[in-house]
Image (cartoon, rainbow, N blue to C red):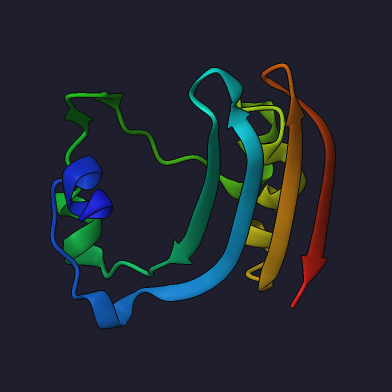
Length: 110
């Protein structure tokens, strides 16, 4: 659903590969929210690649070369798990938040 919403194309669910699980305890302390996030990958064929919508309600989409991802304006804690995604290595991770800021991260390969 998220992929279709963001990219504007529908991919069958069985094509997605689970890559990792992230936990963010106390992510939004004022709302008493802990977040858990599943990370999935999917490979697009050439036709699907061309159908990806360049814009959506949340902004513009851009294809970024893997070695340039670290140059992007990312959430601070994302820098901890992105290498696992780039290397296609399964992982489990947790980033602990204090006062809305990440204080400690632990990422482990599965």
